[in-house]
Image: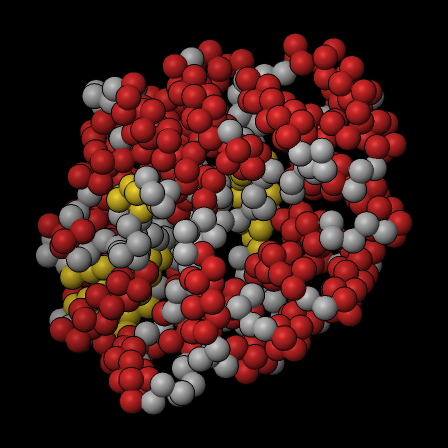
Length: 545
């Protein structure tokens, strides 16, 4: 059973995870995360309240999620959803509450078979999963198995998260945690999320990742019981066999079990049978040992792409040694020819997305002219970087104050021009929302006009929410005063943004809040209290974005 104390601990970790790592690795962080940070204990208590009154609140204050297309290739997209912040925290807490039971039901980590999202909660770091077991270990194990078997099969599951069925998930949850109310609550939440469809997990958050693992665990165990040598990370399977015929048999067995038991299929274009020699030759970490030996012999040696892929750029700004950690990372990044790698990627018609994303992340650790040149290069090549352009804009937003004025102006002019030309780059709401955060650094009449036009022309809640926040940060009271008259027309993310922004309106805002607060739901009430306390504590406080 999960006691009230157990759930509160789960809620504490869930809120910590959101504070430190965000709610998703796809969408911009919602401004409400700042309220979670400043009002952590009250947020935890609210998550507990949502649990105690789950059925009532799910009916009375259902999640107001935000959905958007996000590019995955140059012409392919997936549908992603950002869950309502307070409900996302509850969803994660509910999964964490039974996380130990889920982990115990999976193939043991000691078996060295399944390497994705091993449940290992850490209250200090806010981590839900182990940092010691992941994609790199999956690749290393695959290379080891390739050394032992003449043939390999690489494949991944088609539309794993969007097509994962609720019936099978619910059965799995009831098997591991049926004595608790959380299987039912999780399924009720997901039914609401999917608009009563019977399939689909939200992409990008830790709760969905752990739920996907317990679902696919059945197939993992069937493969293991069959004696098939394999390794898995998320939706990627590597199978290994003594003969090509055995490789086909294993592939057929996997395909059959995925289809019959999970209603899933493998991606035809990514499924291949190959010799182990070819597998090793094409593995992104194939030269790992050799590289380590070379670097040890000559510390000044230029690391290869595979070395960069293995290199961790993880940085915790909340660490007590954050400043030292940052300087250490900068020193390590200098060992890589980031500019050279960037130029080579941009010269291609299609970038290697994982490598390009790693290069983009490394730009923040560059200094001087190298950083300025790198930023301008990525902005001038937005077409080539289209599948990962959100990563480009996030990096620029983070580093904007570290750019010289000339570079800043060029970046802003480029973004404005692309938007005004109705470039396909910004037809995707996700890209536009990240672009608005960059534009927020420049309060000019041109940018104001552009944002007002976008508010009227783009229906996306995340775009409209961020425009409201930007106008508040700039102190544009005339605009907010006019929007106040249309408050009831706003959707949930916009409403919360306006509640926090209303303090810009001074007495006018106070009168409005006194009149309207009876209509606020419990989460909106928390946002109101947070913004009020911040404004009274800091007279120059501005709404965060």
